[in-house]
Structures are given as C-alpha cells and as structure tokens.
Image (cartoon, rainbow, N blue to C red; front, side, top):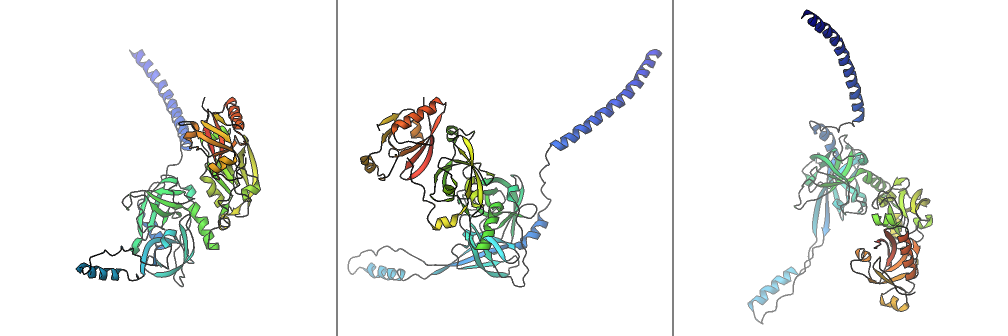
Length: 503
C-alpha cells in the first residue's frame, strides 16, 4: 500500500509539474489564437450613443425653415346656365348666381413650407427645388425665429436641389459641413433634422436602410433610404452621420397615407455637393455630356458579345458630332469604364459622366469585337447640348433579296422596296432588312419585335439582305452561341436586342 501510495505520490509530483507545463502551453496557445482572431474579425459597428442631445444641440441652429409665397390665378370652369321656360322663377335666380360666379377671378396668394440648412456662414442655404419652385418670395426663418428674405441663387430640377442666399449682416450664422455619403453603410446611424411648418427644429434618428435607390424621381436617382422619420415640411432638411456631417438631403418619402412609415429618401452628399458647388459658382449646373443613347446589358447580350457577365452600358446610338462620335465610340460598344471608374450597370454611366469636368479628356474603356479597347473622349456640356437640341439627334441608321424566314428566331424578313417603305411609313433613305412577320411565342415575340421593324446589324455587322441574316445566325449557332445580337430600327429609334436562338 505504501509503495503504491509512494508511487502515486511520485506519479502525482510528476503529473503536477507536467500539468503546469501543459497549462502554460495551452494558455500561450490560447493567447496566440485570440490575437489572430482579433486581427481577423472586423471592427464592430459603432454603438448607438446614449443620447443624441449633444449632437442635436450643436446642429439645430444650422437648420432653417423655408417658406414661399406665389401668386396663383384662380380659374373656374362653370357649366352653362340651364334653360328654363320663359317666366320661370328659377331663371332669375340662376342668372344672378351665374353672373356672380363668372366675374373675373381675383388672384390669390399660395404658400408652402419646407426645410433647409446653412452650408456656408456667408448666408448660403441648401434646400429642395420643389420647396421653392415657382416662388415669388422666399423667406428663411432661423432656429430663434429670426427671418431673412432669400434670393434663389440657382436650382436643379434633375436632382431636386436648390441654393438660396440671405444677407445676415451682423448676425452670426451656424453652418454645417458636407460628409462623404459614399462611406455610409447600410445599418449606420443617421440623424434627420428639419424645421417643418415653422414649428422649430425637429430631430429624428434612424439608420441607413439601403443605398443607391432609384425611385424614378429623376435621371440621376441614387437615393439613400432611411427609417428616420421624415414628414411633410422636412423636405430640404439635412441628414447627418454620427460625426455631425451632412450625408444627405431629405427629399421624399414612400407613404400611402402621407405620413412617415419608415421609408424615407435622401439625396446623397456625393451627388449633392458637386451640384451645389456649381450653383454657387455659375448659378446653374454644368454637367458632363458624352452624346450616346444607352441601354441595359442583359445576360443574353453579354453572352452574344462574348462578355464574361452582364455589366457596363451598351451604346445603342451615338449623337453625330458629339463627344462620343468624335472620340471614336460606336453603336454596339459596351462602356466598361469611364475616366477610370467602373461602370457596373447602365444607370451608373450617366452619373459618372455628369460629374466629370467639362472639356476634360478622359479614357473610356470599351468592349468591342470581343476585346477591350480604350479611346479618349473630350467631355462636352449637357446644358449646351440641350439648348442646341442635340440630345435626340442621333446618327441615322447604318445598313439597307429574297424573302426568308429565320425559324430559330421566329422572324420573316424581306428586302426593302419603295412599296414596303410606303406601306410601313418608312423614310425614303431607310436601309436594312424589313421584318414582315413575327411568329407567336418565338424569341423575337418575347422581345417585342414587330412587323415594320428593320434589322440593321446582326452580331455588330451590317446586313442588307435576309440571306445575310440567315448566314450570320447560322454562324453564331456553329460557334456555340445561345443568342444573337440584333440592332433594330423602329421608326428612327435604334436599339439592340439579344434574341435567343432556338434549336
């Protein structure tokens, strides 16, 4: 027993030393693993503050109420006076009533209210264009109820932004600065402040619910969505990040009832700041202009052109003598990058171009004939192009004999004749191959091809006869293509259509 105990004691002593070493080794390993884990796990999102009071107190003086008045000419469309038998007692009554109602209507004064914020202590104030549109007089009320009459420096309906200017004199204004909305992430805390109905500053808090929302409000929609309550009268007010910087201008809400249901939209500062800077400097916007009409790159179009995936913006037509035309961009090109910026989808290109400096030479990366090509383009000015009526002026259709049917596409085709041009209302100089019939439930029917459409190109090559189209479709089939790209002219409007090849 004693020997066993001794043994156990001796074994116990050895185990105790071994155990300590084992514990030390495990502890060291745990520390190393913890260090690796700390480096590998991203930083947690900034927690919500215990209170927004300190930040709100600092920012509220920069938020203003914007009120407008305008003269509205009242109009009333009155029905004709009923006819009564001669001597009827109703005749005199109705005649008096209609005589009073048909007197010239007096103009009336209409008012509207919104919010804004001071972006420059010299007196510059940002608000929404719809707040001050058609105003005869604009009044700005500060947080302490001090009022100033404001002039409209400039406005931009496309982004619903406007810049006002007041003359503060000796009054010391509190201004706020821009933040970078591109750094805002879904889930970040934001603070929305408005001054609705002249009640005074109203503060609501929430998070960024989504980014890059398109609500069909304008050509450059790129809204931040937030669940911070934005109610009527808050239009034009700022949305702040947790550093007290303006990352958005509260502009719209989605609401069946008219009140906030937690879906609000703000113009991001990345879009707003350049516009406000231009309004401040020029009194109007000066956007970049490329001179192309573009369309979405679908999976079928990407496959038919040998592009790895659907991305970029497909050039459907090019404005003659415009920047793109002079730079060598052609219909059928896919714009992948503009001035070094990726064009993830069609909607992205107009925003990038609009933000580019006028008369600047920029590289444009294109996908053409199955490979990347880079051209240099000198950016034009959109507003000048609008004034010159160039936005709808695109190149006429390139292209112009036996009738043929392409069963794999569901098309019946014929060469153009003077009689057919007259029948389908086509121009005398129209060129291409005419679609005479579309088979129901065919690939062409799925893409809304119609009789009277003209096929100008197939696989980005000009076609002049039905036989050429048949040949090019067969070539695409032999190459293993599942779809073929057509350039279609419908009454002067050019568009690319990728048709699935059956069989």
